[in-house]
Image (cartoon, rainbow, N blue to C red; front, top):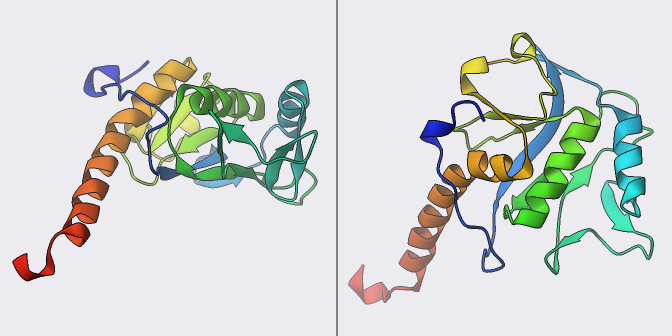
Length: 177
């Protein structure tokens, strides 16, 4: 993993209450370009999954779940006009979730866009060249789901700490404020 010395792993687990958002896009310079739709379709099919509107569902129509908890991971319809992308609004970075996101991004030749930053862009499986990126200095290249978790984990840990401080401030006695 490039730039890995700055990043620390965060243990992921079922106790994660909420997460942060990530986008999945194929980018060339400052333009969104189309993902590998056939690669995404094959990836989903090989796991017994399919698209229903923007949701990923199993053969029974149940929404995608990781470690027993439903996921709001979504993709644009595979038959839409224009560049296809997707995202997850509440990423928890469990091992199962990271494995799925990594595989999906490699299959679709997508990068992970992390609006929280540090890093802003994560390129799984060498799907993008440095010259195609809006900001190569804000990019980390990862070659496994574990590396994806490490790359995103430090920022996620900081987010969770901030969230806990905010939530704790609401649960304190108002007379102490």
